[in-house]
Image: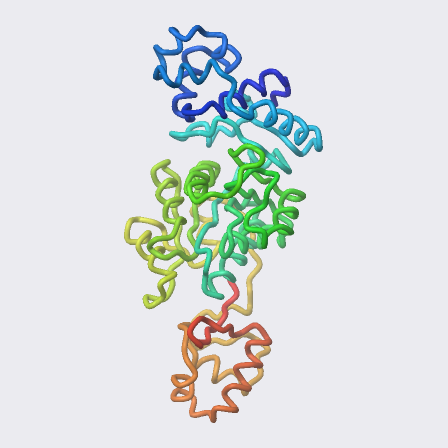
Length: 375
């Protein structure tokens, strides 16, 4: 990796030059070579490649550049696990380089070798998943990571966080692509998770240090999530979910798109169903994904997973089994459960509490209950 301070400073200056985005920067690099050579050009030469306004901006140090470079140098010196990777570096990931809009610079924190992991899969979805959706994200990521797949996601609440946690719980690899500078953690609720990923996985950002979270950053970072991955698995997503942006970008890049189906009545499943109608591959287990990606790895059989709607987990109290079977797999209210089972209200609530404490049932929005299934 390039460690020449002068050259890294030139890359940072190019990244910070007002009005010069990544597309214009790539034109300049193609015309003149490295950033240090760009800044040596006369304005007349620059204007043959970019606009007059951009050419003028390139001849002036960006406001705050010197302070930004001092901060960046200090951060790089803090740890060998900190890195600034440029578009011209041989270590830049080939899969991302081949996309339509590769970032000019990547800031990295953690295990750099994961950028070249042979099997990477994005696992994304709703920030507000159902309890079953969050469990699915964790369990799919756990199984995939145990099979040797590096799980890529965005550190957001909900599915992203569950996917990172699942991969780490398996002792596997995970990459978090974030929408802030690497000296910040967003959301703050994931502070400990971010530190865990930095220690055992890799955190990636195209944003300079000190960059605060902004709404526009997150759709932008989605192209990196898709670009780093051989495929994208959408666990749960509403029709307006940003996860669908990641899936569309993956499809545009010629990468595989997978989606987990859900209830036809659930808002959080409609995005997945739309993807399936558009050609995404419906998956019901991690093994489905592994087979499609031609990854051969043994997966331990989970004897607690029902094989059809009449099965119940082994070891369940005989008195609780009828209630669990009566619930089915859709969210259901107390009145409907009472009608199906004939149980008195107090008895029904007591059994539901026991099932909830044992992890077989969770509470959903609207006072509903939902059966939990482990993948």
